[in-house]
Image 1 (cartoon, rainbow, N blue to C red):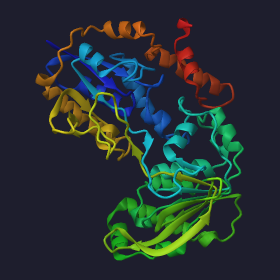
Image 2: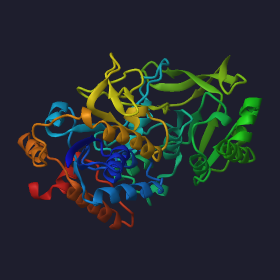
Image 3: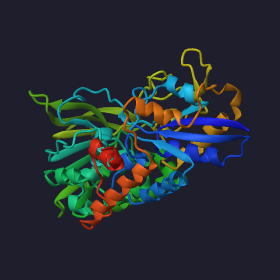
Image 4: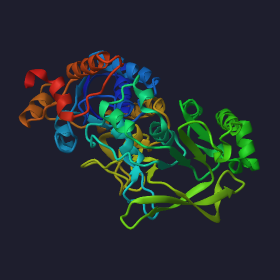
Length: 459
C-alpha cells in the first residue's frame, strides 16, 4: 500500500483539524503525519489568540487534545519553519506539506499618527495578555482614556480586557505578569469606534452581551447612533444575529448612562458608531493625545459615507483592531496584498503564473484570510484534505521518508524540540501552579522555561 508522509506546519486548530480529517478519511494509502509548531506548546489561536475569560474555548482545546492524545500524530514544537527546518528539508523527507500558520500580525491602518507612542495593534496586545512567549513581559498601561478601533470580536476582547477589573480575571488562566500589569492600570474610560452602524457590526451577540455583564463598568451608548435607515431595519428583521445584537444595544439605551450621563461605576465602556477614524493626534513628543474621526451616515445600501463633520476625543492610547494579516514563509508563494498564500481551494499556486505548486497545500487563515470563527476551520480543512488525497500524482518523491530522519536532523542542528510528552509535562506544571493558588491554571510565559519544563531530561 502507498505510504503518505505528510508534514503540517502549524499546530493550531487548522493544522490539527487537517491531520484529524486526513487520518479519518477513506483513502487507498497509509498516512504518517508530523506537526511542526514554532511555539513550545500546541493549540495556536485558542491558547494565544483568545481572551482568557472565554471559558467555552476550553471545549475546543479539549477536542484538540483528544486528537493529539490518540498518539497517531507526532508533534515537533519549538521548531521554526524557515530557520530550523526548510522547505527543501520537507521535500527530502515528506510527500507533501500543509501550511496552517494562521495570521498573527495586525492589518495596517493608513491614517496620520498611527505609529505614535501609545498607538498599538490589537494582535500585539492579545499576544501579551495571553502570555505569548515571544512578546515583552510588560505592557504600557498608563492611559486613563483609551480608544479601540474596530467592530469585530477582537475589538470587544481588547476593550473588555482593558475595562475589566483585574481581580475578575483571577478564575481564568491569565498569566501573573499580565494580572500585575492590569492591576496598575489607571483606566477609567474605554471607547470602541466603528465606521458603520449598529446593524452592520462584525461581532457576535455573545461577545457583545458579555460586555454588559462586567462588574463595576457602565455601558454607554449614544442615541444619535440609532436613527436606522431602511437597510438597517431590513437587516434587523431578516437576520436573527443582527436582531439579537440590536436587542442588547436597545436595552443599554434604557440605562441611566445613555449619552454619557454620569453613572455609578468606576469605569465606563463607550460604543461609538458611524465613526470613521481620520487621525491620531499627538503632542510635541509624539505621544497620543486624542482621536480625530469623521461622522458617517448610512448610504441606503448597508454601507456608509462621510458627512464631513470632524470630531475629536481626548485619549492617551489607541488600539487598532481592524483585522489580522498573514506572514510570508521562506520559499512559499505569498500574496502581499491580502496576507495569504495564493491557492485554489487549498492547493497552493505560483503567484506569477497561477499554476499549481506540487506537494504544497494550505488551510486556515493563511489560506483564506482572518475571517470566520474557529469552528469554520474544520470545513476549510476538509476542502484542502480532499485535494491532497486526490492529488497523489503531484506529491513529492522524498529521498529519505523514514520517521527517524526528522529527530536526527533536528538533533544534528541543535534544535531543542518539544514533543507530545513534553506538552503533557508543561500542561501538568501549569495546572499545578494554578492549583497552588486556587486557580485553574497559570501559564508559563518565558520560552526557555517552557522548553526546560518540557525537556527535563535534557538539562
